[in-house]
Image (cartoon, rainbow, N blue to C red):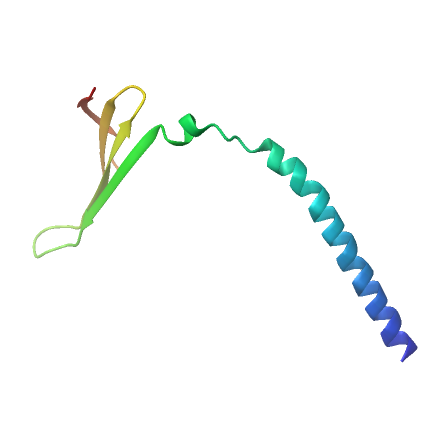
Length: 88
């Protein structure tokens, strides 16, 4: 029974040290997070896809809008982005 108690006390000590470490490092990690709302909302993405049909392959893509410059791009499958124009 003493051996079991020693193991449980050791496990409890390890858990306490882990919780203490997590609490201490959480504050420093939170300080490193960029909370710039403008950067988070700069790009808007609208994705689309359709299934394959007889004689045609499936496709997927997205439209990407840069809200700061007004540029619009279209991406289809794995192709490079194609600029469509700008909006104001």
